[in-house]
Length: 160
Image 1 (cartoon, one colour):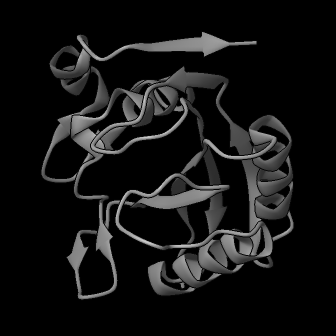
Image 2: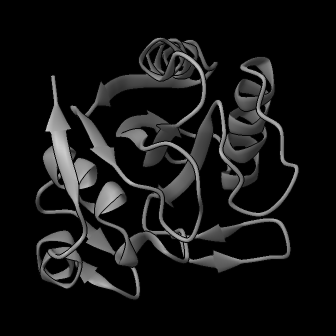
C-alpha cells in the first residue's frame, strides 16, 4: 500500500491536559508502520457545542501505509489507555483523538468520515493544522488558508 500523510487532532479538557496530550503524542510516535511524526504548538480554546473547562488542542501528522480504519482503531486504543469515556455526545474528556485527514481520501461510513466532517468549522482544528501544513488542501473543502477566515471569530490562543 502507498504511504500517505495522516493528520490527527489532539484535545483534552479534564485532568492534567498538557501531560496527557504529551503522552498521547508519544503514543502516536510509537504506532507501528508510522514515521515522520510532527506536532503543532498547543492552543487553548473554549468548548464548542459542549460544556466544561477550556480545551488544550494540537494537531499531529505522520506518514503511514495503515488504512483509515486501522488508524482510527489505534486512536481509539490510545484514548482508552488514557481513560477516555463517552458518557454522552461532546462530554468533557481526558483525551480526544480525531482522524482529521488520511491523505486525500474521502469516505463516509457509519464508523468513520474522512476528512473529519466538522474540520472546516473549528478554529481549534484549523489553526493547529495550518501551523503544520499551511498549504494543505482538504478534499471537498479547499485550502486551509481559505478556510481560516470563516473561524476568525472563535476565541483561540496559542500557548507555550
